[in-house]
Amino acid sequence: MTTQSSAMPPLVDPFAAAFPFAGADVNGWFERAGMMPKVMEYARKARKGATEFDVVYESGAVKLRRYRGDARIRYAQPLLCVFALVNRPYVLDLLPHKSVVRQFLNRGFDVYLVDWGEPTPADSDRTLHDYIEGHLHGVVHHLIAACDVDQVSLLGYCMGGTMSAMYTSLHQDLVRNFILMAAPIDWTDRSQLLSVWTDSKYFDVDNLVDTLGNIPPEFLGTSFKMLRPVENYFSKWIGFYERMTDEKFLEEFFAMETWSNDDIPIAGEVYRDFVKFGLQQNLLIQGRFPLGPELINLRHITCPVLNLVADADHLVPCGQSLPFNQYISSKDYEVLRVKAGHIGLAVGTRAHKELWPKACDWLAARSDAVD
Image (cartoon, rainbow, N blue to C red; front, side):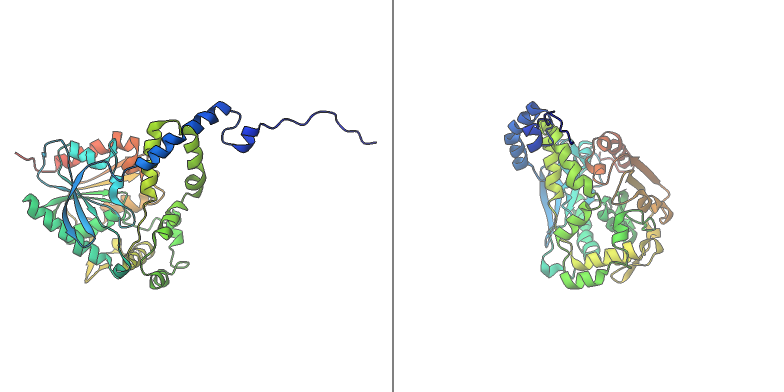
């Protein structure tokens, strides 16, 4: 004979079932629901950059920003910031309290930033040579004339750091100081997924570029997010739910979301050059990276160099940046490390407390003071 228990089944909390993140904390759920107007307000008012600037030079889609600061300019050499071609550059000026631009402005530097613009389908044949020897060289010449100086200081971030290293090797006489920031130089270290995905055994970059022309932002953005899929598509939103009653968190969250989703295409030939000669063949450290009629020789770099790296960088592992001093001729070379990720190097609280004041000190010690 089969007996049945008379025990009642456990009651189901309808709020916990409908809203699993809320769990049994019904009051917490209602508090978060009440925050939705604030959430929408912060989402709408997220700005693309924190500091006012003037556009002082244009060449096609490329614009040069000069940032406005309250501090008196104390150093003669202007600081030119060069970001990657695959994202918008305002991550270097994301929020007033998380702005690399403001760190240098407040110390008395004259700060400029290259806005590469957005390539159109007609620009798919533009190469790295066009950007570096065309646009970047034009920007540097403009600054030298406008500021009445012989040299500029460069800060290059990620791909922009690689491009700045190439530029400095070709025009060392025009560069006073060089700050390398989470920039890939030596692709011998293939410890991250991007190196696996772009391996020539699996990835035909020629076929991709010949088919698409410009590489669309959806392809690039999804590729970067899939480097950390759990964090980007799941954990981030759990964290958002848990902290959405914190208005400072909302400001920072939506500023970061606005930037990370503000993707742009990259010119097809630039992508071909960077993937084939960089990630796949690692020609830069060999002195064989072709840039127009030139082969890049990093040994030509003799100016002071500061190499900034993030210990938890999932996009550019430290092993791709730290060997830089092995391939240059600079006698004045220094490394600063911080516990942060690739983007945290620019916007992280720890980086702004521990790293950027030291970077400003380093540059100040190697720049001419204004009388």
